[in-house]
Amino acid sequence: MNNGYSVNTAYKTFNIKPRETSHVSLTDAELKILEEIELDEALGYYRDLFLIGIYSGQRYSDYGRFDKEDM
Image 1 (spheres, rainbow, N blue to C red):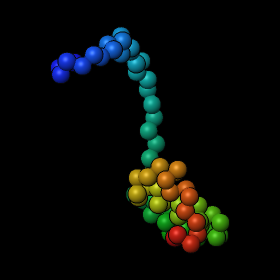
Image 2 (cartoon, rainbow, N blue to C red):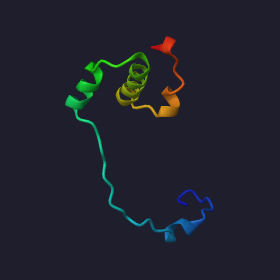
Image 3 (tube, one colour):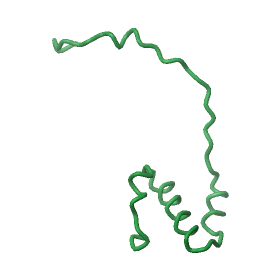
C-alpha cells in the first residue's frame, strides 16, 4: 500500500482465536538415553531417523526418505 499497490484489506477483519497448547519436548537427559539404548536393527534405524530430525531441525518429509545406506 505504501508503494501505491492495490491491496485487498479483507484480511484486517479476520481474527484468530487464541488457544492454549501444551508443548512437549525431550530433555537432554532423555535424548542421551535414546542415543545409548540398545535396540534391534529395525527399531535402531527408526530411532536414528528420529534423532536426525531432532538434531537437524528438519521435517520428517525431508529426512524420512533416507535409506539405511545413507546412515
